[in-house]
Length: 436
Image (cartoon, rainbow, N blue to C red; front, side, top):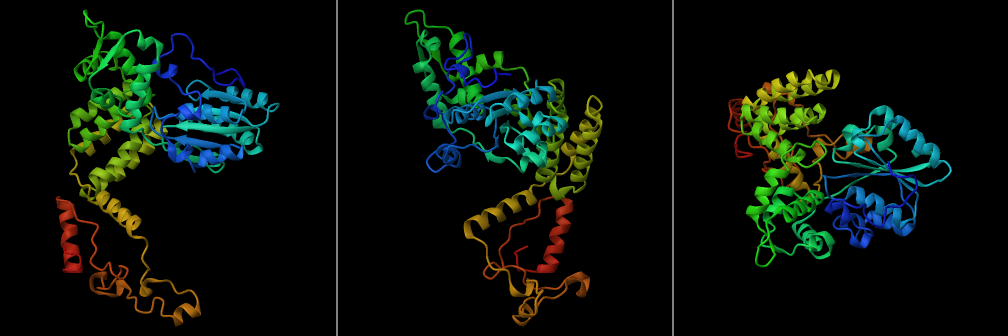
């Protein structure tokens, strides 16, 4: 825990990693998230108004959540204290609240707030309600799953976006140009590609990888230059970034490989990556949530039972916990990996939402509208609707799409036995209307 009410240090501690040495000290130095702090951004408007509400910053690792929290408090000259959900307990939370009572508007920053238990979050609630502290939480996980509703209702959630290529290469250039330690070894950078690819958009990982490479790469004996190219970066990264870290680093790489192995119907690779995560201390509920999503996105209606098993897995893991949850997770992983696959439903809803965003919302046909009042009945709301169960086979051919969208199709059944039967029914019901 930082010293209570101390502002962020102007200078990083001796021996700090490159990412810490280059941490922005002002909003002008901050990279990315212009939708929040740029001209007209919601957080900038709060700063201009001289106030800061409780908020939760949600985004992938290395996009500036912690730094932004520091800078918001610093800009408004507010007392600031930070807790890490990994190390802090209920007593730490209560101690902060007790000391904050004498310093109203204290900004309490909680890193990885999704790792706080319900009791720890409950301990915060009263202080947030009474304005004793302004809560700023940071999380890489969807707050809807892990932050209690009472806190969510009192804190605005803002999504931080991954940094773009120009922003990341700019960070590398700035590090080579400004950092005193790196400037001691003249660097000849031939390519950014491997640096960006291995760091995966994580600015902290990018800068620390850059430091590892510059320090470990061999200098040209004649010029003294350190040559940094994709081959050198790849070789040194394999040596230094191979340990699984559930708080970052390989976390997103391994979960990505895990999901893609199941999607690719390889239970052996999927079990390997599951074992890597479990041995690294990964939260089994995090894994179970990803399996829930995958069961719908990648297996879908090719095997509807997959979603039921994934839901049962999540519930069982929540109740049982480790170490026995590995058995349940392993069963679910093998089942999903060996199931037939279809992303037809996933593709359909993505296409439908994109269509609505692009074209707006069309009027609901009169025959489908509800008619709770006499006037609505006089206007023929619902008058021409045919109750489907009155038709042969519980089907009546009628128009459900808005005007002009009569033949628009979003769902195309996948190539598997279950959805092949769906396709037969759709052709029987709708004939040539949707082109099935």
